[in-house]
Image 1 (tube, one colour):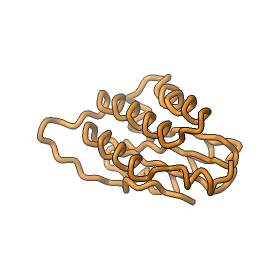
Image 2 (tube, one colour):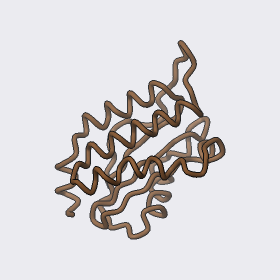
Image 3 (cartoon, rainbow, N blue to C red):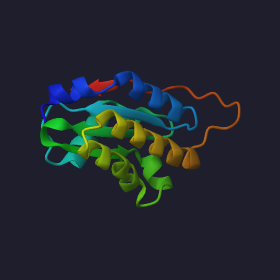
Image 4 (cartoon, rainbow, N blue to C red):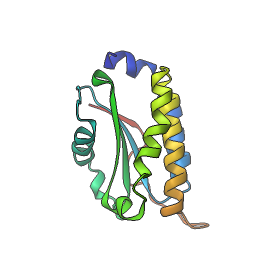
Length: 146
């Protein structure tokens, strides 16, 4: 799929709303990035984007990136060291699974929103926000592209 067509199909407002809802229950930070380049190795490309987007700068090292490369029809989810240390081995696969079926059906926004919801549920268990706790939003909620 052409990246431009994928980007036009996305509803950024729904994605940002899903990020904000998920982050309201956790201290973790979530971002979505759409790569305009082909990424045959989506995991490596996601890790590079994670660094480039400054996601290692969170206080608890608890950032997560949902990375999508439409040109190569690939995607990946990567998290910082703080999340990897707290979460079970199948953590990332459960999130990828939430995206896979919707993407196959061409429901890209639905797939990303479902992945964010799953991610929010899992992160709330490992990085819960305490009652009345105010959490500083350390990373932008907008969909990044590049």
